[in-house]
Image (cartoon, rainbow, N blue to C red):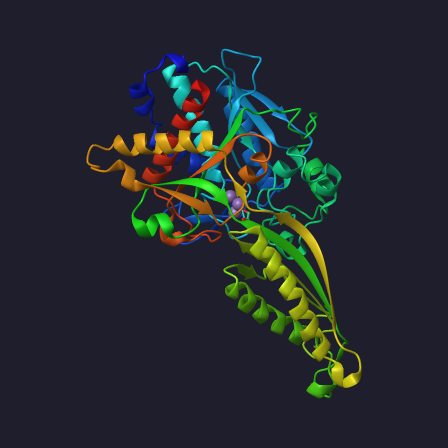
Length: 453
Ligand code: GLV
Ligand code: MN
Ligand code: MN
Ligand code: MN
């Protein structure tokens, strides 16, 4: 029983890193992306949420967890909860969670490592015959990426009561992403896509229906800090704020060969100026601003587009800074629109629609301290390390994660491991098997420590 272990016994717990790496690459047979190196595992991943590839990996996950003695629950948004029972049945399980969906040009680690570390933690506990007080669960959250259906952390958001089920069900896929060659054949919404792969579960998507004692998540950093400092574990204490808008700039279609610049209301020219301005204003406020989707109509070489839509993702460590940047950009974009088309008395117009808003969060101190202790203990397992503490740092997450939403309801924190060159959302995203194993051992210990509390 975990409560009967000595601190020294807890500190010596570690996973089987080879098995973890094997399982991880096994799970990447569904949806491999662009090949970048000589080995069969040197590919990215393209496993869009609720695609056929996603169905295959989900089926594998359910089978694997069932074989490990876990009880499976699938909710109405296709979130899969697998629980290894504990001694007590009157308390909720402590969860390890992340996501198996990827970006269109994603890698093998973003999200996947989080779920696979959960599987490995359960395998290790089974090997040891370790009994826990409460159960230990692994959850695969649906559509964390928000790539195919453009709300990130979608299902953990519904689970936490922050996004409505109906809004999630009715979300339409992004056409440019969905028409990529390996995507499933054109389901329109989250609901139709869920139906198509048979993952509409019978249980409501809510904390009440599938409660948790706590949520821990292992993830690659997706940034440069750990790798450039030569450190092995990031104890994640917070996640920065972000907000997604959809903008529509309306001008007037006209002939590219006969219309002088001063006679145009060129929606693309105005949009391009707005994009440049977004970076300038974000920089001035310590934020980031990015445009990922652009659509111009009518989409003809020799017609100046009269309608352009684009996405805008604004991020910053403080919610208030994201507010300021949004407000300032609204003014600046209005001014840019007003100038374009002035000459014909038909200035461009710009409309904003808020798609998603995630204020900055801070994680729970109990979870953070479990992670910190576990990180130091795991780094100390390597006898050649003189200063285990120096390999561990606290860190803020630049990316969103399902832990953002779970943290609104239950104690939550995260663990980061380094990734090569800080590169992510790219096929060459890479974390060594050793770093993956270190992170998985940390999450195993963190869950055990939390269970003992
Ligand atoms: C979610 O993964 C995000 O950071 O966009
Ligand atoms: Mn992720
Ligand atoms: Mn991602
Ligand atoms: Mn993410």
